[in-house]
Length: 314
Image (cartoon, rainbow, N blue to C red; front, side, top):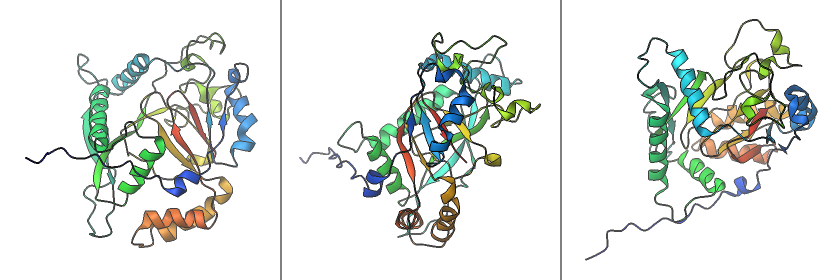
């Protein structure tokens, strides 16, 4: 009797353009430099702006996962004050389509930002892990490298459409709430959340113009939370009011960022307009190839791991 075991597929061959894509700069501030966030950002801004993005590796550890989840849950509970206090608070996701098959045109099954389902953090984590395990089970090598995972994403982007889920723009933070007490010195701090880099308070830090804004604006003067699964994505964009953005990855798998420096913005937008939305048979493939061919500088992080800060320079 023939065996019904399905042979594992070979690992994906990494695209040459991914192999050669230059990495954006990574900075390692000293404990002394880490005391003043705005001052340090000013210090690296000129160099980092040539890449559009940069990564900062804190000299202190991240908050424990248990603490981060407790803070996230507290943020959700504060947003849903009318919900049952005895049940775990939930958040809603958005459906995102991944895939485009030129051989057999298909309509988009669901609008990109159509509401998905309601989850607790633990429920969504379980679903995300199950999706990843099921998608990667055919690979002969485990775990796959960051470049191999990224190759799978770009292959999926031009193949049979499927959906993933992504929760975005949720006011709150996984950092400990800001209190009236003075921040600890970085050398004394147990975690990043106990330093001036706590996302709940950094917009009001010394040297920040945002400290003069009286009202809170989620995503500008106060943080927002994003929760996602493998292959979820966020569109190319410029930050609100051309501000820089500051992000912190609390937990989970590595995340890939792509960036374009400000001086290349017009040329990049022209490539998107012509080749990304110009009716090409394979818009994503043509878009990537053209961007690189005409010399638009693209930079990336593969992967951007938990416990790191990320800055985009608009």
